[in-house]
Picture 1 (tube, rainbow over the protein chains, first blue to last red):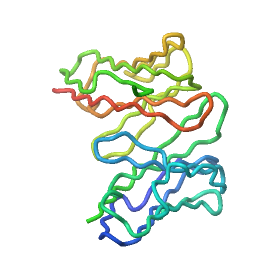
Picture 2: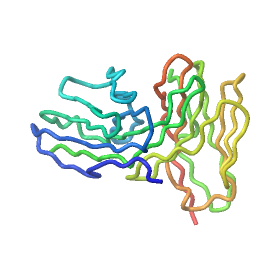
Picture 3: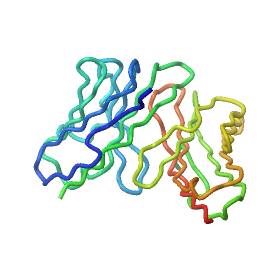
Length: 116
Length: 109
């Protein structure tokens, strides 16, 4: 079956533009995560959804970042008034369930955002 | 001190060599993950383990819960194994992944 897909794969935005990044998780996966990975760094947690509920958005760096998953499947990460420091790879991951013994996250290919 | 530490940071080896990458952690965990990231590519989950040992092809992952240590081994390494290998843990009390800094592996033909 298909894995996690993300679009676009690459996005160049001018400073101040709004961007929308899409994530299609594996069908039936309950949990969805967004991560931000700056160049040469490890991924940093942004936000977490369980179905359509955004249970944790503590990692969103500012109020310019907004994520939604209205029907509990596809998710969109929106960044308003992009800044150069927003340049990074944005990774989406999904998992079937959130179990007490940990869970396996399946990652998408990422969207590389470059803000000029 | 980082909660998840990997070593070495960089590793260059010849094709065919046996590779070991180490991961130590300082928090209580429910699972440990080994992931692979190719340059410019997305992240692929290799293993998730909470005890013992797992094997998949030429890859072997082990974990010692008492010592809070895990190793990833690659047997008969090949240039296509060149990638960044990341250790990450899921804490007992939290669903978030805590990431190690990664090990950049280069296998020369």
